[in-house]
Amino acid sequence: MIVMKFGGSSMGDGERVRNVAVIVGSFAEREGTPAVVVSAMQGVTDALIRAAETASRRDNGTLHRTIAELYARHEEVAAEVAPEPERGKLLAEVHALIRDFENLCSAIGVLGELTPRGLDAVASFGERLSARLLAAALRREGYTARALEATSLIVTDSRHGTASPMWEHTRKRTRAEVLPLIAEGTIPVITGFIGATPEGVVTTLGRGGSDFSASIVASSLDADEIWIWTDVDGVMTADPRIVPEARTLPELSYAEAAELSYFGARVIHPKTVLPAVERGIPIRIKNTFNPEGPSTLITSSHREGASTVKAITAIKALSMITVEGRGMIGVPGIAAKVFSAVAHEGISVLMISQSSSEQNICFAIRSEESARAIAALNQAFAPELAARNVDRIWAEEGVAIVAAVGKGMRRTPGIAAKLFGALGKAGINVISIAQGSSEHNISLVVSDEQVEDAVRAIHREFDLGRAG
Ligand code: ADP
Ligand code: ASP
Ligand code: MG
Image (cartoon, rainbow, N blue to C red):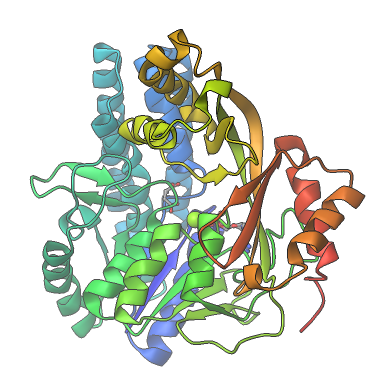
């Protein structure tokens, strides 16, 4: 059995939702009933979060505009995809959900506060709407289909915003609810991105997390493959929006796919790979707008290509935090103190950079966490700052990580030289070089303004656009 996931990019409007229904339906006819996981329509999760934030600031004008847009968009799609006899019922369901969302926003406005738990409740509406729309679109095409809320399938811990599944519970519930539907030929359309605690409180798995949902469902059902349908021809040598000549990578190992996604290839969420590895489930990445076109197959064993560098990725909107001081030289435990202060705040460090002296420690984190990191470090190092052992703790905003990813790269001599040569020629200033633990990548820090030029320069230097 196959688990298919359709991202927001495949669910932009009514016509696209119908296109998804045609893809799923014709597959079901040929190969048997798949389980489907679906994201919110494109841009909807962002709109929901924005609406809740404006509600917490009591900015009612903006809130009402956003809610009106949500109604308009979902009503339009519902009217377009629903088969005639159930159009009224579907519209009523859409209205009821958006009304619940409005009520939630009113409560947030009264409290004047948006908690992580509230934010997850808010963000869950996009998938709850889209799953109903896609199930209706499938029925219009003549298939039996039912929308299922993952809140009754995926049981998670209560880390709102980045919840993790409780595997045994999840497996049991998913099998109990989904397998009977598949057996009777009903296509289950499951909400991506969301889950619930054992007490039933809604959680989310992280932004872009519907890919992870698909892999959780696939693992629970012992699926044969996971197909992730998106808006590009699989995983490519770079983001095709940045590098137009980027090419599809026909095969990748799980390790390479994990590395690529960790370093910014949004086409697959970083958490997707692990559950698939554990059960040996291959992942295919396919294009909804070009279903017969090139695609990527991710497995444990793949033919070793000649190239060492396979793809170039980038993560933008980061901050480089530096803890600096001549008095730090030779003092044991400084690094441990830096990273425990940051970890204590729940901030994840994307890379640590190496300096030749011991006078500073630098690391990159997401910009939105920079103020909290600086505050935590100032507090942790108050005695050292007073004693002048640490001179300065500061953030350089607006930086990005560029990573060249590929198996065995770091053991191959000359790659780093070629990479820096390419950046030098393109006039790109390298702010720092990362110290990565894996053999699979070399990463460096450049300014946000230069990151796209850096990706293009490296892609060109390694000739990644050539066929082969
Ligand atoms: P979905 O809504 O289907 O989840 P996303 O927008 O999350 O889609 O991911 C698909 C996008 O990922 C593509 O449109 C592309 O711009 C981007 N992307 C970034 N890096 C890569 C890469 N190496 N290969 C393919 N796509 C990439
Ligand atoms: N809709 C969610 C998001 O926008 C999950 C996803 O698209 O994968 O983050
Ligand atoms: Mg995505």
